[in-house]
Image 1 (cartoon, helix red, strand yellow):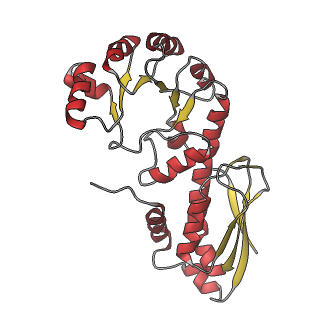
Image 2 (cartoon, helix red, strand yellow):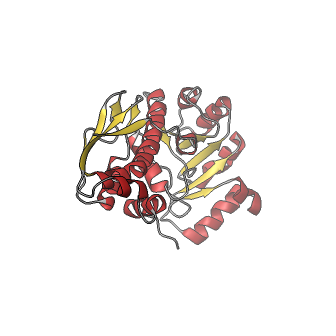
Image 3 (cartoon, rainbow, N blue to C red):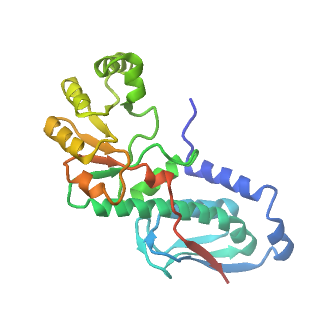
Length: 277
């Protein structure tokens, strides 16, 4: 079984990719004892995430670099706001600059998008969830960023929750049979969620004492019908083709959860710059 990488491991891979045998430009131009100060500045409005990851980047590059965040993960920033300051050897700061910004910008972009969805459904009782549509190798960070934006994480992977999808159902013939096979093999520890394509699927699931039902690519009308069918007996999750334009309408149907793949698979990085003096 492959283990989930931690932040330190992810940063080590990223630095190895960028630095290789060393920053040939900086070591050629800058004296080893040259110290500088820097500021990470927001150039667009958004929500910050990834400050601890950026700190890990500079700590691994050169422990003498002092990284001081000026906001916390989840904070809203405006253009011109200082996100963090740093001070230390110039060669080290420039060596870690791009890797730190890559993490900060991607994670802040995810947090910004998540916050927009969370704000849009405020007052409805619906919770915004992420999905497994994350960058390979960066799922831990992508999901950290979703939490910073006010969302919640769905399952981490294929191992920590059962999600019976359309292909599983089609392969074994019916929803009850798929659920029975899972219960024989997995037992009680893991939650079981079933993907439903129609209100009829929801009706078939109701006697099965499931933990959650996923309403996949259904219209608002069908989702509303499913909420009426379930009548509060099982949490419902709407998913598929949900955007900022229609998420409020889905939330007002009464579903408990709305999962949005675009939070992580279509990230628009938050514009941040590192200014050194």
